[in-house]
Image (cartoon, rainbow, N blue to C red; front, side, top):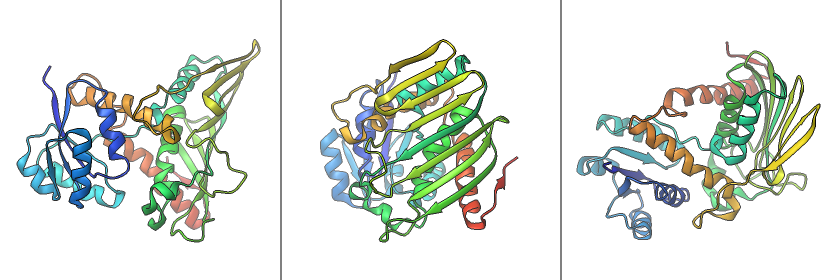
Amino acid sequence: MTSLRFAIFGAGFWSRVQLAAWGELDEVDCVAICDRIRAKAEARAREFGVPRIYDHAEELLQQEQLDFVDIITSPDTHSELVHLAAAYKVPVFLVHENWRWQTPIRQLKRVLDEGRIGHPFRARIDMLSGFPVFANQPFLRELEQFILTDVGTHILDVARFLFGEAESLYCQIHRIHPDIKGEDVATVMMKMGGRTTVLCEMGYAENHLEHDRFPETFIFIEGERGSLELGPDYWVRETTATGTHAQRHPPPRYSWADSAYEVVQASIVPCHANLLQALRGAAAAETTGEDNLKTLRLVFAAYESARTGQAVKLS
């Protein structure tokens, strides 16, 4: 099978993990890296043995024969780069939404689909952390819209993955850090799948009440015949009339993964694998651009609800 050739745009914090994860898969080769700061592209290329570097995206697209590009830049540049790649007929219309690919979340979904707890009527999804996220990614301080665009895209996508599409949404936001531009706390409540009330709580307030198990997501689901929980340290607990059954589902270990981001970084590998299958035409991608627009619709609706103080109807 012929290897697919790709380039990456962006040589910042996440590019190292993206490249390492691509390296876990066969028949895919990174042939070029582009970053506006050429020295960053050079450093990343040396680290991974990538043969060519650029500091202008269009020059890269003019010079390279590519099967796809991986855009790993700040959100404000995505539209320009996606349209530029499309103009050169290079595929970019898949979205790297890896959160739903975390090992414990995939297991929770499998158990939920088996139906032993019955139809879920209420659920809570929590991503509350005291982790100093601004230390590794200082640009986040400058975002006018922060937690709903950064964490919210992942958490709201997980809600869709587990419970289907939202019919209505209500949101409140807060800014706790005095030295950032956007919101760092958000609470979103949705009616989903015609039957489930879902509460999503997100926070980077760095107070002493937030848990220290960054970046684990905790989930509790109540069903007609029992409950299902994803708790700390990757424990999945199913409680029905037969009792409570618990099993730990940790992520795989990779030497390149930062232990502080382990469950998130490990999920990039199966996400890559799914997107690669789609690029080869072997399977459908879970997170197409079309699908991701449904998640972004929830993000925009959350900001609208927070602004107006009113619930937003989505269907």
